[in-house]
Image (cartoon, rainbow over all chains, first blue to last red; front, side):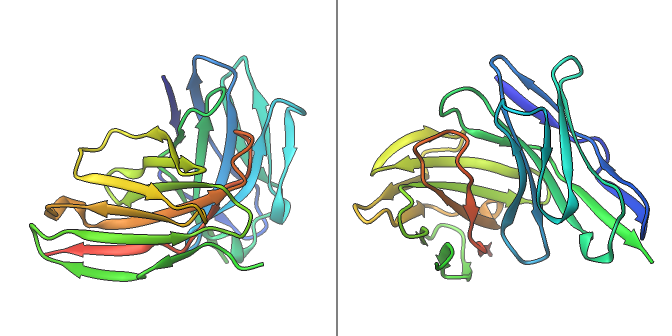
Length: 113
Length: 114
């Protein structure tokens, strides 16, 4: 079985501040991990993914995430928040092979000017 | 390259009716997945198809079904609609030949059941 826990359904940061969105996973096999962003009234867009290569993954729009097996975490960070980063962010896990993708409950990021 | 398209974008039905939603994947993509998104349950996996075969199925009742055609287009059907089926239904396509292939999502179909 696999699962994802996103801590904090809502996160507020000031423009220019560090963005940290937390994701912890559970998987019985080495996982593949993903971060998606969803803007209002749109589908999801992939930000980055971990595929068992480098543990530090860089994605689009300045986001990055680090896979930490010992902590079963895959937190998403961005050094400096921009107003356009306001959206909902989803962490997802896929176990080995073609297991289904399981999404976390999402974190809404608010950026305060 | 055109993105994933879903039709219709909005749909209003009444309880007991059935509905069919359509998804056209990105050209060359052979895998299509369907998700239900609601405020209470978040994103729930419905099913995944690859080359006309169902590769995975989520924990939904048998009222929810899907299929994929030889051109990779996919449809999902919900019979005997219930109020709780009101949701945004998202379709995602990928090449499908590797579990890490990027999924590209469509804008969704907003289904309202009255």
